[in-house]
Image 1 (spheres, one colour):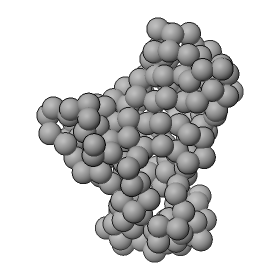
Image 2 (cartoon, one colour; image 1 turned 120 degrees about the vertical axis):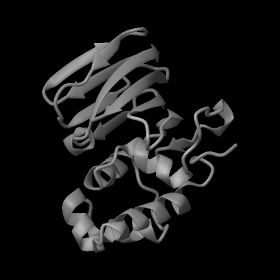
Image 3 (cartoon, rainbow, N blue to C red; image 1 turned 90 degrees about the horizontal axis):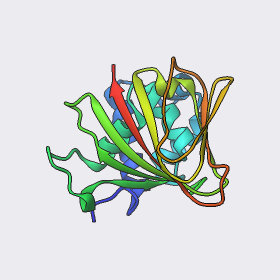
Image 4 (cartoon, rainbow, N blue to C red; image 1 turned 60 degrees about the horizontal axis):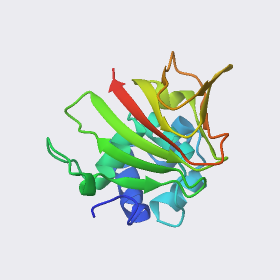
Length: 188
C-alpha cells in the first residue's frame, strides 16, 4: 500500500523543505509566515520531529496550500482513478487522527478526505488553513462537534456542516467511539 502513514516523516520533511526553498524562504521567514518556531521547522526538515495536523495546517497555510495539497505533494499525485489501496493515509502523532486522502490533484479544484477521529480527541486548526478553501463536513459515524470561531455545532451521523469565513476551528469527538467523517474541499 502506498500511504503517507507508512513513512510520513521523511517524505513530509523533504516536501516542506522543497516548498520553502521553491519560494526562496529561509527557515526564519517560514517561521514568521506560519507562526511555527524556526527550531521546530528545522527539526521537521531534518526528520527529527513528526508534525501534528495543527502544525501542518499552519505550514500549508503559509505556503498557500491546503493540508491535503501538502500531503499529496509529499506522496505524489495520482491519476483520474485512485484505488482505495493507493489512497494516502496519514496519522497525526499527537491525537491519533487518521486522514485518508480519497481524492486530490493539483489540476482539480475539489479534494475529498476521510477522517477517523479517536474518541475524546480534538484537532485544532488555525484560520489560516481555511484561507484558500471552502469546505463541507459530512459525519458518517460517531459523534462530532465542530467549533468554528465562537460557534459550536454538534453533528449526528448523516448531518453535514458547511464552514463559513476563515476562523480558528476545532474538530472534537465527544463520544466513546471514533468519529468518521468526509470532508469535501473546494479550492478558491
